[in-house]
Image (cartoon, rainbow, N blue to C red; front, top):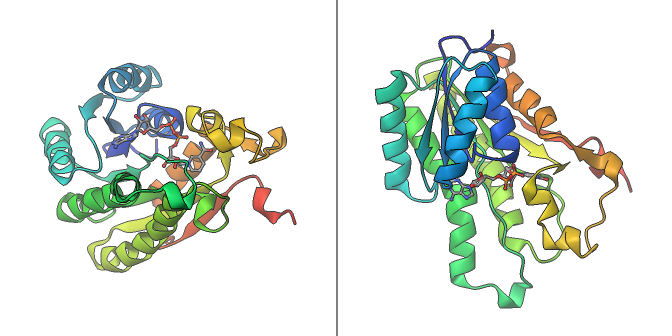
Length: 245
Ligand SMILES: NC(=O)c1ccc[n+]([C@@H]2O[C@H](COP(=O)([O-])OP(=O)(O)OC[C@H]3O[C@@H](n4cnc5c(N)ncnc54)[C@H](O)[C@@H]3O)[C@@H](O)[C@H]2O)c1
């Protein structure tokens, strides 16, 4: 039980990779907070996480792009469970538009959720986590290779790697590790609702599609004490998809 007595907050924990991660951390002993904008899905996720073996779980409705809501979620988590040891910055969304159609509002929405959300939670983590705390940021292979129509998402995910490095530097003296993973194509609603995938513009070989549980396993490793010397790392987890010429 790698996470006994630990309390984990998973953003976007109501679906896909976040839900699989919440279940995995819970199954290994963590009390889990699902921080998600979708209250109904988050409530269902809490049941699933308990069913997976978590000693306890709690849902906090939260738009990660709003700093006050993030602070309220962390306050609630600490009131509820008395600790805050692990943070998984997983909530994310995409907008699909040619560059010339993108608006300031589009950019702000994506940057708020995919980048600033992680910053707001990291700030709270630095204020409340004890030594031994761990933060895992869910970036994307779009941080290093991308395609047309997803400019703000790719930029936000690249900046999230930069945030990971900066936070790792400031986290080290606090005893807090900060790392990132770059998932490839993962079998979640986000993948199959992607218009580039639906249209066939982004071709995905079935052999290159991973399961949310395969990402959750890597996140759990990085969040655990087994990764005690892993700091500021960015780990690609894509089944080797980007290796192909
Ligand atoms: N699925 C993939 O192929 C893939 C690949 C690389 C990276 N990722 C990243 O993994 C993460 C999870 O993606 P997923 O595929 O599980 O997606 P998903 O759509 O299944 O789940 C995303 C969750 O985030 C929540 N969310 C969205 N906006 C939010 C907000 N403002 N505040 C709080 N919660 C919010 C949603 O309600 C949902 O529960 C994202 O950051 C995504 O960019 C996914």
